[in-house]
Amino acid sequence: MIGEALKGHLDLLLLSVLAEGPAHGYAVIESLRQHSSGLFDLPEGTVYPALHRLEEQGLLRSRWQEDSPHRKRVYHLTAKGEETLAKRQAEWQRFSKAINATVGIK
Amino acid sequence: MIGEALKGHLDLLLLSVLAEGPAHGYAVIESLRQHSSGLFDLPEGTVYPALHRLEEQGLLRSRWQEDSPHRKRVYHLTAKGEETLAKRQAEWQRFSKAINATVGIK
DNA sequence: CTTGACACCTAGTATTGCTAGGTGTAGGAT
DNA sequence: ATCCTACACCTAGCAATACTAGGTGTCAAG
Image (cartoon, rainbow over all chains, first blue to last red):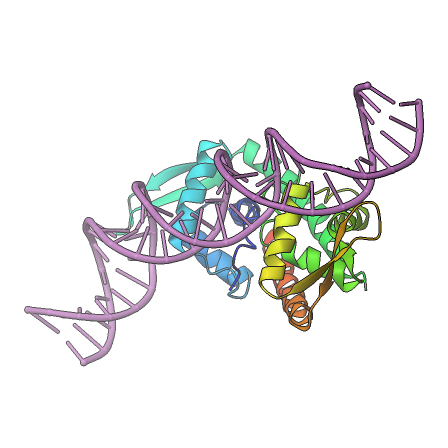
């Protein structure tokens, strides 16, 4: 349904959701689904590796939460993550503006 | 600069430019650069294969223009291409709306 | 007479999201 | 008792696609 359109924009989405507050992977998926009215119904195989990648880049950090029956890895933004989020937001605005300018040319 | 962000949206751009009127590959590149204020400065290795792909899918048709010193392959939208453009435009609107909804959640 | 703009092409690469499979707990339905 | 669904995590391999880097050729300007 969304096809390849998401490529290059997933980081922005994940960082945006986690800017709301710490969350674990499954909750991130849920949050994306709700904020997008069901359009971003991402498979786990998309989200988990992406979160790992962002953590490896130092944009996120995680800790295990063992108390609940289901073990959860809770992610939170680092300072670098917040900076990157701001950068990605600005990039998105320039990008979408350029697309709109090109599309609305007739 | 634009990185992987373009993936999945290139077709929309190409179809949009050609909806203005027939054009050859080099002119399409020029047009994209202008409409995007320089953001979409796409290499030929991106645009030419994409045009071939769109023609193969029946969204474009092309004919050689031999009169000028530089041989040009001029592309024009087919009926199917116009339909697809409308579809892609609608998809883009849903997509960008969903991104904006997710990004602006703080 | 070489550089740059115009104008086309393609093989191979890298990134990235997704598919498809796996592990395990818990609760409700059959 | 058994199955299915939701929750919650993981990863190897696949597929799509934009890009890199190279190639061909004309023509004007320096």
